[in-house]
Image (cartoon, rainbow, N blue to C red; front, side, top):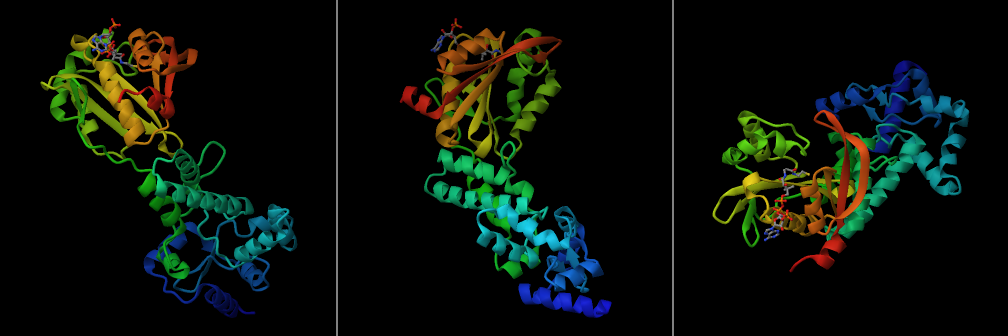
Length: 380
Ligand SMILES: CC(C)(COP(=O)(O)OP(=O)(O)OC[C@H]1O[C@@H](n2cnc3c(N)ncnc32)[C@H](O)[C@@H]1OP(=O)(O)O)[C@@H](O)C(=O)NCCC(=O)NCCS
């Protein structure tokens, strides 16, 4: 078969599978970025159903395949062994293996960054997990199982790849041929926006003596003297800061971020700034928060840190649906450890000599509190 006839025959097979849809210049550019032209040898094997059909055909008729298109056959020990090697990944379920082989041969795995049986299986498992998670979270957006499952499905956990790393963005052409949103839009972007994007609470938070609200640029003034003090900053991660640095820190906290860092300024009902606090949302499905606090020296010893921290714990558990809140501190920070104990947090970790801080090796503590423990002990 001549080159043109070969290209035409592959194009016809491609259209038979995918339908006739226009490829725009943007689609072509996307495909050139992520795929490579098929060789004549590969195209001949496609027509014999021995290698997968193209992932795309460009506007000019060039058949495009993943860069590793022929490599699986090499790994399998030759193109004749590819089928048996491929279906063995569905050991014990030959029917699914054959269906997957048919999908693979038809070039439909265009969503995957890497088209291998392992990745095909992982993506299918993660999509099923995301679908089950979305079902749970539609009923209760804080459902801890749903959040864990969705976190794993979208972002992965240690040794398990999530869809965000498995999937390519895809292109407008794919929306036409698959008749809907891309896999990434459906299983990464949409569930992340709906269930893994923290929204702000109704500010401000109020307690008996305090108001907690987001930072304003003018708050910097209140913190300048404390941040200049070697003593006050000695147990914090940061080093002392001058006025301009404090202003910059406060300014950055006024910028809208992705919602995972919640900075709070603590003021009295009379409007005096007495300290600040933060809650950093993290972990699988954003279900863990790290809490932090400071009280200005002139306001210490009056229970303001305790009162503010209780409000932040409530915010974490009730508004953000956290299942666990932790505090990490320098083990020499007796006042912070005492605060954790007052809050009913459990000292779970004492890391000995793990942490380099301001010229010395020191130890650290991690305290934690689970949502159910907080509910059992929380004041009404
Ligand atoms: C850690 C820090 C926030 C703790 O502040 P704190 O003043 O000890 O804590 P509180 O505001 O809750 O005050 C508790 C004290 O007030 C007393 N108190 C008075 N009225 C109170 C009330 N209504 N409710 C509770 N406690 C009250 C408590 O008995 C306690 O006194 P004690 O320390 O003698 O036992 C503060 O030391 C600090 O900002 N340090 C520098 C920055 C820092 O290290 N941050 C933490 C990094 S991990």
